[in-house]
Image 1 (cartoon, rainbow, N blue to C red):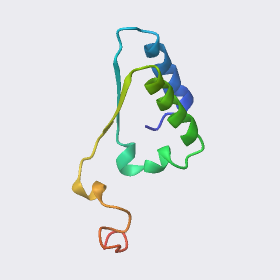
Image 2 (image 1 turned 90 degrees about the vertical axis):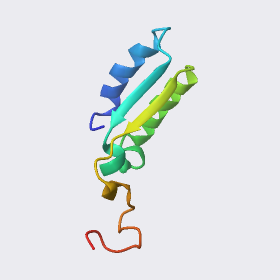
Image 3 (image 1 turned 120 degrees about the vertical axis):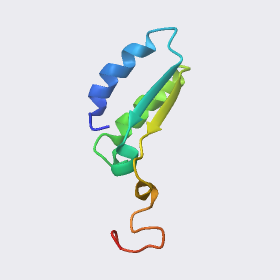
Image 4 (image 1 turned 180 degrees about the vertical axis):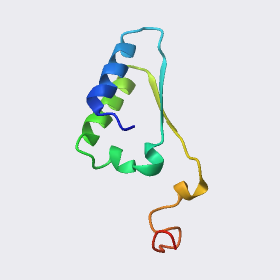
Length: 86
């Protein structure tokens, strides 16, 4: 999810006006390569508030995490705390 929260909001909020929309799924690779998007980026709080708005509207929100390699599931430094690439 490289788009700003404001751009994402322009896509998501109109869906909340459609009564028949029950679920919103967002597919992203950002959980694998830039989880800070949801933690410390300058608009991380804004994106989480947008997600809260979706849930508060009674819709289901799903983040579809895209992983292409098992290495992407390892914590920074590896499972044993090794330096990256060790």
